[in-house]
Length: 174
Image 1 (cartoon, rainbow, N blue to C red):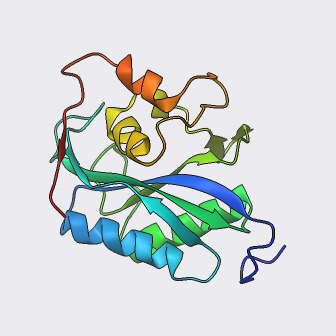
Image 2 (image 1 turned 90 degrees about the horizontal axis):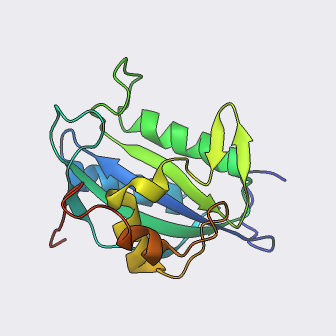
Image 3 (image 1 turned 30 degrees about the vertical axis):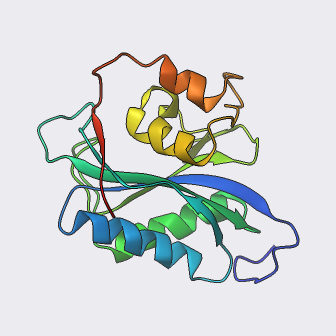
């Protein structure tokens, strides 16, 4: 199937996280969503509010702006991943030696239909999403009853069981 088709006949639903903690963070996130959904083969279904979020793992960096959005797309998971990587590079993202470090734009596939994918360059569902408040909170804003295909738990249950006070997220007025 061609990645440039406008046909949504064979539609897939994907949930994607967007984040930035460099430059004009909120604008970077908005532009990343627009870049994907204006290309003709990804239609925006829903978007969470934006959150100001505390960094996780590598904490010696500025807070992030994060959101989650869902799309309908005829793209395969690997085609979508390639598209997201092109958009990130176009926004100025460069490879960093620091894992989980600062970034202009981060776009991650969280879920793709109910598929479970484990390849060297793509893991779906996202392997750390179930322990990330900055993912689960905005995901629950869109669809709290969505089932994690590996853990077989609803997203709101996963969010509820995170430790209190861990990974602060603050709703921002966008």
